[in-house]
Length: 369
Image (cartoon, rainbow, N blue to C red; front, side):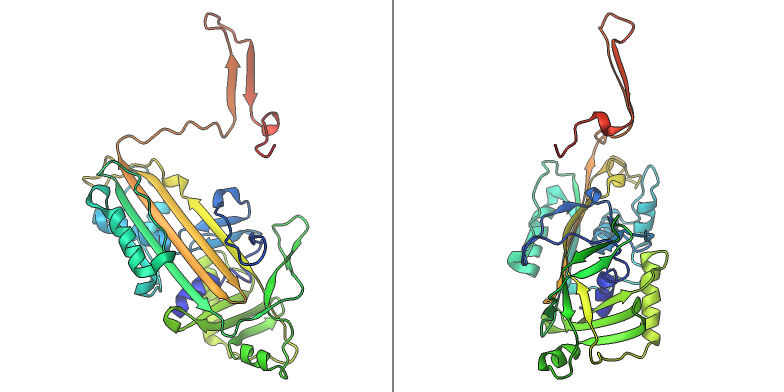
């Protein structure tokens, strides 16, 4: 696994993650899928030009771009929409610096339902990733449906594993009314050169650049897929405007730094992250293409799943992206999710006997009741 890729997936851990992500109940249970749109302090993004917001997590993974690129290959050019969309324009640009993924860590394929693309995707998933691979469902009876799919799987193991911290980390966040939250952590509680275990752990830790207790960069070494060398970079910093600019700023500091090792009494405390996010790019749905020969097609699905854990044992990432295009008129969206007028009247009368302008949810039934 490439160093650059693991830097991309980890730089939110200390400095970009400004609001706590959910950690599942006890132990290492798999977290349930959460719709990203339901989370007020977390955004899943398809590219790194996304602006960072105070108190909000920003999660990027290249799987959706991989699926988009396979769709471009099938269309033999950029994905052209009848109504221009900034997201599509950015995705058409592709990766600015490559995706940094080893060939055996991901799968990306596109084709037509009637030509067996779903079956081909499932065969390749099983061949490359074995029993843990997801299974794409055959849902379409229309052979003209286009399916573009990407899946990636990345693992980094810490050897030896780090300590589970005895006390929680008080994580300060601009996104919380109380300003902080107690979260589970791992690392080295207080480094001791007299501890054989600490000495083994410290061999995999670099303090890349330390300026203050609120401005530092740490690198953790581990083993990636195939037992190759891999690393996680954690940067406790003030971010730049975008995720890409923040990563580039950290990379410049790393290039110019003179790394040091842990010293007596140093504390390395890192929050545990464990989440499974499912994001639908609603802004794409229902939009028709203008690519020659594909004018009848519209986006019927644009899903992006990201499952990630980092704890004392290592970092694990699994991510899938699924794009489907159908032929025909797009289904209309008749959802009263904003202010609207409601009135009741007799079919033979001119005036209503009840009229309501609905602009606030206090008259509605709360979904949690």
